[in-house]
Length: 130
Image 1 (cartoon, one colour):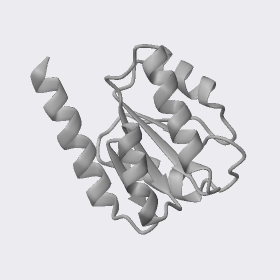
Image 2 (cartoon, helix red, strand yellow; image 1 turned 60 degrees about the vertical axis):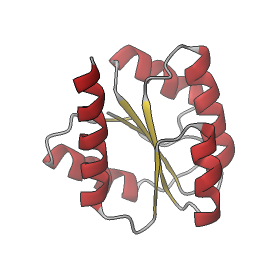
Image 3 (cartoon, one colour; image 1 turned 90 degrees about the horizontal axis):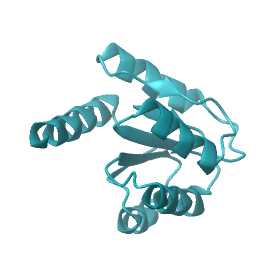
Image 4 (cartoon, helix red, strand yellow; image 1 turned 90 degrees about the vertical axis):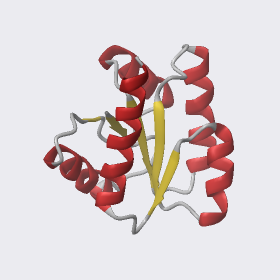
């Protein structure tokens, strides 16, 4: 799994907490660090052959960043990647993000157990189909 901090967002405490919890749950996680471009995120996903891409966004730019990510994944034939978005996401934007192709949205306050359970279930379902 890849956890990425796109754009100018400088707040990564939440992302680091999620990364730690995922690792404790036995999920292999790569963290990009701050200020990554969508190109860098897609290239890392391709190079590392991750199953899941998680964007952590607190800057309010979640809609354009997510849309661009989904477009670039399609262009690079990576539509099999499970995409999650977390952070400061208004509930009214969840539907739009899902219309872009985001699998799930975890706003501020989402329970770590729910995130872990969702990832394990969805990745498990995908692996069973292979």
